[in-house]
Length: 149
Image 1 (cartoon, rainbow, N blue to C red):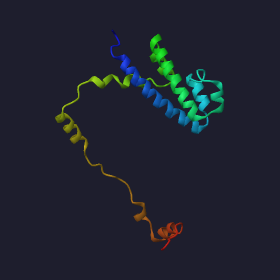
Image 2: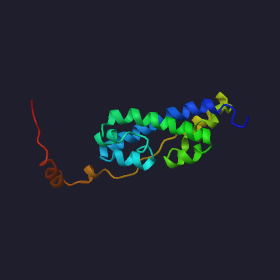
Image 3: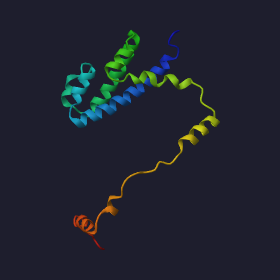
């Protein structure tokens, strides 16, 4: 079979897609264009129009995740999963699970890699506060009020 183990990967894709959809829906809801976002990615047609009209985030999240899972399974069965994920801007979900079965590097290699990465960076800049004159410092402190207790 060409896609050996893909059904297990499909479960992971469904979970990550649901999480990503909920995050994007929250962002669209705060911006005030949740129904427009769902229509743009094609899930608006799969949901009830009354739900879209109400615009309740909690109700729409549950229904949208179920509709997304149904659409992903349908796309997988019909052979256009990659195109569907590209349409909803989640194509990177396919590449996420591919490298899980690769051998891990040894502890020696990890230690060398960590050791090479640790170094100090010098912070370059000017201490503007110390470069100020006494008059400029007094002018700056006028904006702040000292509260003594």
